[in-house]
Image (cartoon, rainbow, N blue to C red; front, side, top):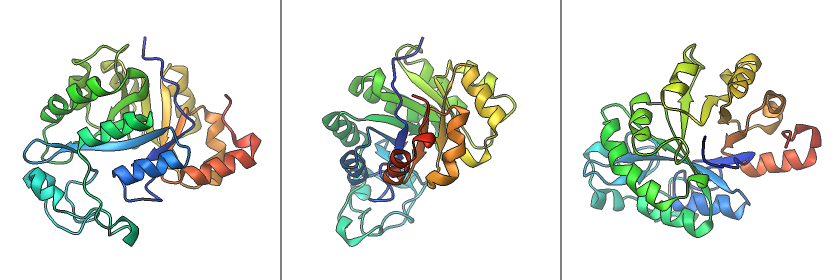
Length: 257
């Protein structure tokens, strides 16, 4: 048994990251304004143990500063501008804490696929110990899928809650031969695969095995069109509005639901 999660057709990748700086409160608000009910976000720890919503191991790409997260304190992180790189309208945007993001998700009534981001040199056990209590306390099981590429993080997450209370997703790049073992090991709810590296037989095997299939990160709805027939539950995309327009205009492209 798993939580009664009604996965949406579209999940906004890192928030609506084509419309606002990724993994920020602004990106989640943009997704909500676009009519998207679920977002995908990344969580990891700063050097002082503060959980933050961030993808990279450092801050160079998406801020006006430099430095690795594992050497950064919360006051140092809050001194960064994480919006101006994307556009002047977002100048002054701050890195989001997990606490602030959970509060926003609840305010907007949104669901989240939260990825436990274990970058090189980071401790998956410490991440799970710090993140899971807050997440489980804040969000109902029906609005949460916790995913990771790191099997240790998923395995440790399962010790916090059984399968009917916490949906876990196994993240893969290219589908490994042992995917069934990986999923069974953590009593997974879903498998998240790179859409362009997935084959039809693999997709059908995943869904036939009883796992929800989430595909990341298609941004061209026309290119992704054939994959809807393969049985994915959701597409995790940077371009949810482009997908919405395409699906609305093409009945044959819509998934069977």
